[in-house]
Length: 422
Image 1 (cartoon, rainbow, N blue to C red):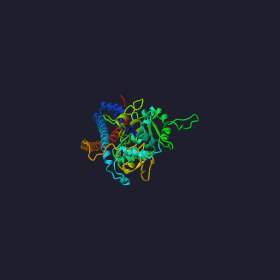
Image 2: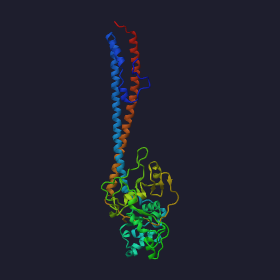
Image 3: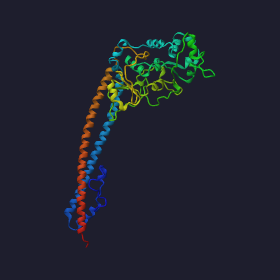
Image 4: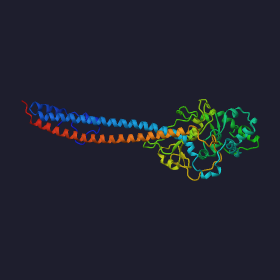
């Protein structure tokens, strides 16, 4: 028996392992037999051994060729998927405004900056309401440099959305307390808003408490303040050549590698920020998107429908909302019931009844890329069929080779038993 002879049914399944089988002992006996007059049978064994190994090598190369093709095609398909998602984000804002909003038909008009300010002022005992009233009606009374230079404003006034439905969804997700939160660049602004006496009690003669008393208003309860320099910022890349400096976040993928249907974009990238607030608001050069709005929304995903959102659960890590009112606050945390009608909302970027000039071109580009993706899927399916066929042929040839080794080994043993040295 050969020292390296594999037992039947226990050979390595990889093509390379099978192609490296070297029946040395059989060849030695075969050559001896050829010297003793058994040339025809010995020649046949050597020929068949070489032929089978060459066949396995060819099939192994075919398998590798098809595997490389599939890997290449899938890589290009993933790039097409990302391009499709990027274009859908661009077009998604227009799709969102066309969905019915039965809960709020009485408030279907677009939200303006003045309306947002009026909504904040309705909360007259809140810190945001008092701050806005001081800025609009009593600007001369705000002489503290930290108020004028460090306090940016209220969350609801620092971003705009593309349509009223998104504004309502984001306000519902964040809640009125966050929408009314005050935003400061540094901790100096936070200290200017509220001071304390030696016992740690609030000194109501200074800060926002003192200013509210000067206009006949009393600040009631706690209020949130965001300090940009102390927030953990987004430290990744930005979308190339995007004047809004949207974050280049990794698109969600289902466990099978496909993009979830109905995905529109990330909430943090669907907020429009004033140009002056995009850069250098902190000492490290960060703007509002990668500080405030990234901390508010993180990687909150936006989907067209609740059904799309539920199907995408496996790839949702930081919550999701849908344009028809679905909401997940986090992994496994669902917000059910009727949508809250938060009365403070982001203003609308612009009011227009016409599509932008590049909308048709973008729509055309999206259709073209989707068509290319379908063709790519067909190519992948065809390559997969060829790969499966090559693997089946390889398995059959492998079995034939194993059987040949067993037979030739038995023949070699017989020859050794019957061989008598001269």
